[in-house]
Each structure stands twice: as C-alpha cells, then as structure tokens.
Image (cartoon, rainbow, N blue to C red; front, side, top):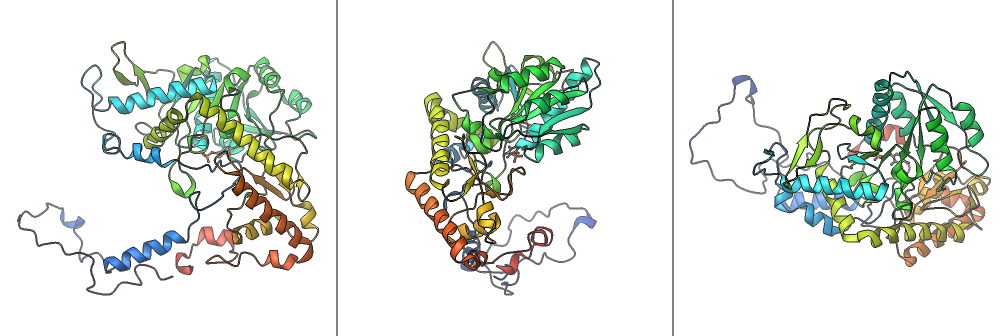
Length: 481
Ligand SMILES: *Cc1c(COP(=O)(O)O)cnc(C)c1O
C-alpha cells in the first residue's frame, strides 16, 4: 500500500479555508519561521477516508475477534466507559486547572474519581492505600520497588537482593535491576509453583523483598502464599504481588489478606480499559499501612467539608513518578467499569474467567500437553512438544491460528515451559467462541501430523506473511502492506 505522501497530487485538496480577514500577523521570531511551506500530502477528502479506512482494516483487535493473549487479559472493553471518558466535563479538563483547596476548585469531580477509585481498589485488594500515578504495570513495579528501597533505607538497613521466581514476567527482574538490586532467581517445583525449599535457602538478611505473581504465570495459585509472605517478613523483607493476574482473584481473595505488602493492578487488564495498540494503561500501586509514608506525590485527600485536594506535603515520599494525575482517562474508565459491574459482577468476572480457561484446558488436553495437569485459574498453559516432533512449533501454531481468524495466544512464555502456548480466554467470551477456537486448535493438531508443511506455510491470509520480527521492529517498512 502506498504511503499517504506517495498518494499526494499537487493542488488536490479536501477543504478550502477562506482567506483571513482579521489582518493580524502572528508574532513569531525570525528563526522559528518556516522558509517554505510544509510539504504536506495533498489529497481529496475521499482519498484520505479511503486511506485510513484501509489501514484500519489491516489491524486486529478485541473488537474483531477472539484474542486469548495469555497474561494480557484482552477482555472486551465496554463502550459505555468510553462514552463516560468522553464527557466534556472530563475530556476537556486541563491538568493545570486550579484545584483551589477549600475553594471552588474546577477539578473536584476528577479528584473525586481518583479518590473513589483508590477506595474501590483498597476494598478489592485488601490494601491500606493506593497511588494512582503509575502509568502501566511495569511502572507500578518500579514504583513499588522504589518504595521497598525507601522503607529499608528509612530503617537504616542495607539490603541488595530481590528474589524472583523463574516463571516471572520479564518486567519483574528488569524492574529490580533498574532499581539497583541484584536479582536472585528461585526455581519452580515439579507442580509449577515456586520451590519453597529453594526460597528458604535464598532468604538471608540481604533480601529486600520477593516479587511474586499471584496466581503465577502458569495460571496456578500457590496455596503456600501466606507462609511465603511470612517467611520473607521473618528476614524483614517485603513481598510484592505482581497483580497482572488479578482477574483470577476478583471478589474471592485479596493480596493484602494473603500478606503482601505491595501490589500493582493493571487497570488495562483486569478493569477492561483498552491496551496494546488501543491506548495507554494504568498501573496503580497499593501498599500496606507501614509503606504509606513512601507513596509517590501527590495523593488525593478529602477534607471534612467534602472537598478534595492534592497532598504534596509528604516528606518520606519516593517523589514524583508521573506528571499530574497519572493516566486519568484510563482510571476513569476503570472506575466506571467497577461501578457498572458492582461487587457481584466482579465476582462473576473471576468465576467465568476461570471457568473459560478450564473449559479450554479440558477440551484441548487430549491434543496438546498441558504444562501442569491440574485445574488452572484464569489461563491455561499448553505445550506444543508433541507437535514439535513433527516439526510444527508453537510459533507455527500461532501463525495457523491467525489464518483461522484468531489472535494467537502468547507463545514461548513462561520460559519454564518448552513450546509454551499461554491461553487466556477471559470471561467476556461466549461458549460458541471458545468452541470455535477449540475446533481450530484440534484441526491444527491433526494437520501437524498429517500435513505439517501446510501449518509451516501459515499465515497465507494476512497482508504480509512471516516477517523477520527483529528487523520489522528496528526498521519498520510501513508501506510493505
Ligand atoms: C502485563 C504484565 C506485566 C506488565 O504490565 P504492563 O502494564 O504491560 O507494563 C507484569 N507482569 C505480568 C505477569 C504481566 O502479565
């Protein structure tokens, strides 16, 4: 497809702006003035509409079809929350508008949304307070680990190590390393959970904390998690819950009750705000009582007279992690989603997310080897080791699924499972959709034995076939389509 610049025809235009009759020249400094007009593409309105409509059709999103990208919780994003985020009273707010503490602040409604979302997250996660500032899960992790460091420093302790199980998402060790910690990896046991004996050996006075995903990236809940939190606390370490998998716990179990000191919540996963190509995220971080002094500035507070204000007077705070209020529109959509579902609705989210994952696991078990043959939580991890014997690898299966109209699952993660396919259906998918996906996976398993070359030739129905993914990321040729 041609670039929009290549479609340009001199003199063609989409609109005509009348000559200015105001007669005021903008006062722009000489060296900022353009020497010649910008060379913008010249096209008719129809050319522009067709160009961008064609581009939009080359995309695949949750609104197009099933998107079981494990760990990413690609659930449906209800349009109602978009409508609310578009209300002029929110969408037209400027973050620099005065809050006028005690007076007629112009952002009271927005501050109320932040304050109340904090309260809802406290209730859902069992934590003492949240910072709404971090703009993604990984950003929340860094915020949390910096609070860990501030806590130990405040107590006059020098600790240099963070423990992380081998199934962790890559952002966990990356976060710990960026915060200046040594990372020690704890292996998994035969059941796919962090090995307790290995943890016990690693727990020394140098341990600042443990980062644990709950349930873990194999979709398994660790029944010893309370003991784990206690063991870490015994060496005066802190426990960090990577809450990306909160979808499995909603309404049933709270990280704070399990003993975690810190948790991040991916609003763009659990609370249905668009992500990936669909927009920015938000990764609020919750802490237990003893870490409240270290939360980032600012914090929304509520006066007795019902007025909200931003509190910057926090001497032990780790400081700023984001400008203004964080990803406000994302927080607003998550808030609307929580209110829309209510407590009962959130409980049904986790019930159906877990049911859907186990349905897929059960139906596909005869065809693909499960990573662990046990009930899972909200996602199931299958391995393509049997198919790999015929030369069909997890990547090939992913490409074959694209040709069948599905977004592939996450592949080759977690790293502990060979030929991993991490399938997260989410609660918003119907039985018909799950069955269609299961049928496609069964068909592919059959072809992997009978006609493996057909699977290796996929995808055939996409604008481009298999790319050199490294080159495509480094030197994207967007006109290739
Ligand atoms: C998505 C995810 C993260 C990182 O969250 P982002 O919002 O993508 O930065 C961390 N851990 C796990 C387990 C995840 O799935």
